[in-house]
Amino acid sequence: TREVRLESGAGEGLGEKEQTPPTPDPEPNPDPQPNPNPAPDTVKTVPKKGTVFTDGKEISYKVTKSDAKKGTVAVTGTRKKRNKITIPATVTKDGYTFKVTEIAAKAFHNKKLTTLVLGTNISKIGTKSFYKNSKLKSITFKNKNAVKIGSQAFKGIKATAKVTVPKKMTAKNFGKLKKAMKSAGKKVKYKKK
Image 1 (tube, rainbow, N blue to C red):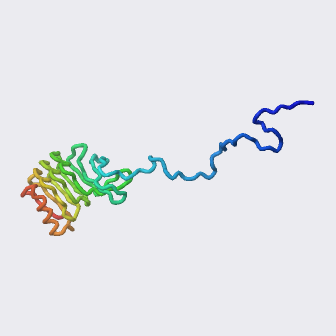
Image 2: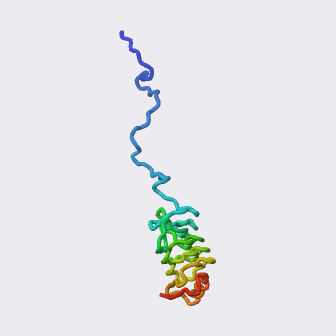
C-alpha cells in the first residue's frame, strides 16, 4: 500500500471546504461609484474676503465680499506706473466674477496718472485715493449714480482737469458728485457725455 501525505493548507479530503481565507479580487469594480470629494485642484473655492490678486493689466484688487454670485472687490493700486488706467466693471478670479465697487484709500496716491476711467460699478472712492496726482487731467465716471468720495480723494490733481459723467446721470446726482469732488479745485470742468 502506498501512503499519501497531505501538506497543511492543501485541503484534507474531498468535499471539505478550504480553510484558507479568500484573496481579494484583483479586478477593479466594473461599476465604480463617483468620488463624492473631487480632488482640490479640480474645483476652486470662492476667494475669501481679504484675498489680494492682480489682473492681466497689473491692477491689484482685494476681495471685500466673498460670494460665488455677488462678490465684490476694491482696487488697491497698480503694480506698474501707468499714465492711463481703466477700472473695469467686473474682474474674474479663479472662475468667479466680482464687481469692482470701490477704490481703496491711497490706492493711487502720488502716481504719474494722466487719464482715469472708472467702471459702472464704482460706488465709493476712498480717502486720498488720487491725492497729489498732479498730472491727472481726465476723469470719466461710467456710473450714473453719485459716487461716495472720501476726503481729499482728488486733492492735488491737475487744476484744469476735466470730469465726464454719463448723460443719464440725474441733475441731483451730478450736483452730489461735484460737491464730493470739491477737493479737486474750482477750475475743474464737469460735463455730461
